[in-house]
Image 1 (cartoon, rainbow, N blue to C red):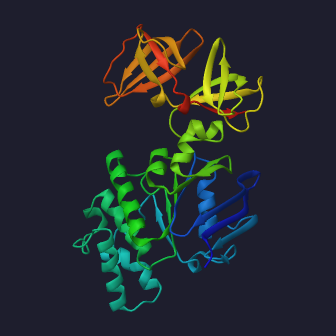
Image 2 (image 1 turned 45 degrees about the vertical axis):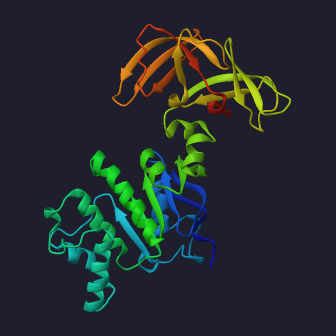
Length: 359
């Protein structure tokens, strides 16, 4: 049995002069939930359609379960698909909607009923068999869409922006339901979204896409904490970016100093930071910056600043801080200690959270 359930091998797809997928290589493990994440137009849905067979690559191959399916029709790929618009038949009951894929596959009535009821139990929709789509909520409709995709026991579940038509609270609830369902089934899943919070909450791994290419593949922790490009750092979460120059690399290679104007900022060194004078892009997440009273003394990477602006966000406070007239940082805190516009403060940039991208 092959290690990977899905492989995109050097896949390129063009629409006239537009290269939607540009030599994509991606391997998805069995039982893994992989998210294709990126802004509109980055090529993530095109990549998904290459997996489903709705798109045939201009170059490269698509493999599913150890077989080359590049030219195999969609209905022979054993895939379940869930879309953002639910795509339920309004004139059919919940039972009939879920049953439909089994009818077109020619299963007998008894087996159809058994599988439909099993799928409805999976999504906790027993008792709704006779309801029509208009009689159930948006979240329930999306669960019915999931049941219909799973009822014929596909090898792979593909989800294309499945929560984008739901309100914010329901989206959050459905994230956990989808994750729980996939874990219970042990199925391989590919999830397409532009929502970074969905990607981080749901995924075993994330493939961040930009302009038809995959910028980085990694776990949510790796993508958030150790982005390999400015695009990834900027797209995933909030970031403060500061251009600087390597001022020194310590002999143990574990620390380096980045000079930003008149400030020297210590960081954990990277193997590819080799010599003073190299230009780098330093970044730190706003929630990793500490704000301290102006009276605070001592410590590394602690600088004087002034609160330029403060915005109250309920569960946190968002600040713009002018640091020693050299740079402006965005800082987010839990808001338990509140600072006011014009107030002098100290800013602490923890070494372990200061990272660099070599431009």
